Amino acid sequence: MRFPNQRLAQLFDMLQNEALPQDELARRLSVSTRTVRTDITALNVLMIGHGAQFVLNRGTGYQLNIVDSVRYQSLLEQPSHQLRIPRTPPERVHYLMVCFLTSAFSLKLEDLAEEWFVSRATLQSDMAEVRDWLAHYHLTIETRPRHGMKLFGSEMSVRACLTDLLWKLMQEEGENPQLTEEVLNAGVPEQLAAELHNCFVRCRIRLTDEGEQFIRLYCSVAVRRISEGYPLPEFSAGDVDEAVCEAARQITLLLQTLAGKPLTEAEEQWLQVHIASRQVQEVAASAISADDDEALVNYILGFINSNYNYNLLTDKQLYADLLTHIKTMITRVRYQINIPNPLLSNIKQHYPMAYDMTLAAVSSWGKYTPYVISENEIGFLVLHIGVGLERHYNIGYQRHPRVLLVCDTGNSTVRMIQAMLLRKYPQIEVTRIISLRDYEQLENIEEDFVISTVRLTDKAKPTVVVAPFPTEYQFEQLGKLVLVDRTRPYMLEKFFDANHFRIIDKPITQQALFSALCQQLEQEGYVGADFYPSVVEREAIVSTVLGEGIALPHSLGLMANKTVVYTVLAPQGISWGDETAYVIFLLAIGKSEYEEAMAIYDLFVTFLRERAMPRLRDSRNFDEFKAVAMDCLSRF
Image (tube, rainbow, N blue to C red; front, side, top):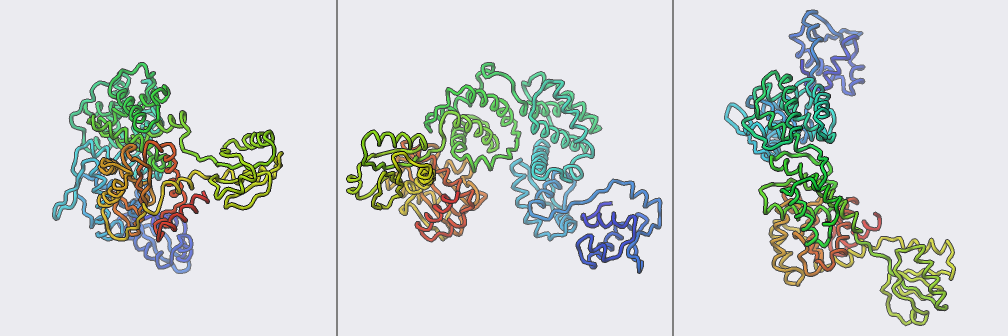
């Protein structure tokens, strides 16, 4: 018997061994007594054919009345099968996907709507996302009048889609009834867990935990599909290591037993590809022949060196790490095997500079190869590139505090004070050392603050008075100025201005926006004619939405003559691929200011962490925008 919801299952269990009044049942289930009566009626309808009913006895409450003990005992011996009804739109999309991917017959939305207690219109709306998801796997849903809707596509695509979906659900929710009851044959994942691991150990194949879990999930899906009469068509894996071939051979025999049907040669060949694409390579970089994978490593590192001025070509560790990863990545992209990257959104948000460098390199490489490298794969490459950048460069420009030192004592005293200051705060940059008389003649001070041995007249800059031998208190006061973050506010002052700020409160397309902004920048001499096509090309590769409605359109590489950020606020939102952008920063970054300008990315990451998009979007002019931005930077 299948309970339509969890509450009916709880009610059934409560009344097995005792009689309970309506009030007690309502209290335990946190519902009204009217709901209890409705649920009892629903339970009795379900139990009509099982020899029992729940009846109400005055004074004692509801109790179980068994009419046919044989039929009722047969019901109790069956495994419970509770239907988890999807409540939210994402859950309904997942369930609809599972239904279409596993059903041998046409489905009617009316039937599903009745079972899930929603309207047909609601499911019709959810189907738009279902179709988009299936389209990525070249799967389509066709509708036939009076018959319903049915999924069409290759068996490889069905298995890939189903495996990726289940993997996503497993990562998000852990144990999920869909994984064990709705999709996979009972007991199969548990049987595969130990057997697959032992097989890989015997064949000396190293896999990550996630890689082994994914193959186990694919094998579980394969068992169901094969047992229901859906084998793979003809397929050949090409050259594969002998160890991988042996592992696939052993696993094929295991799946044959679990499915209860013989497996074709194509099944074993496809298993070889799955294992090879997730195998952890243990060979040294020098032992790998110079084929596509080595060419791709050289191309990526060379592209970053020539276009972004970071030389990672001599990093042997990075070269070996990339080569090891890309060797298996080439196998995956060749056969369109998708490995989910759960960190992708974090990588894009928190390492935007390394992400853009890697994306630009891979996209440029893509013009010369038939392979399509997915965002997930690029995310993995970004982690390797990011580690290399951190190992060799102080990534993230920092603007050190610039100090004016005013001292009327002798030269030796000045040098002593300067040495003590730099020993305590080495990030200080003493730009000038002048006398009190020279200080009084200054009209303005360019430095961030002043350190003096005597009291001074105020010139609109913070001042700290210290003794020739500064006390701890004076060092503390100085530290409050030294340790202030000046990098991001400085970036805001230098690269953002009112002339490159717009509020667009009427509908506009992404293309029209790019054209208008780039045209102005070209007329002002910030960029050349090749900048606009490059911005369009970059956006076509992957959306530049960083998150929270903030977009960072930019060119592929450093193509600006001078660095500037064009800020656009769109209160109504601008359609940005599958998302909507409300705050847009068009980046034009030049090579001459590259090191400094890279700190701009820290500004945008700060806006995300502070969830500042609504406040930025609602600014009425540049001054308000700047005030909100400065507030975010000061609180971070």
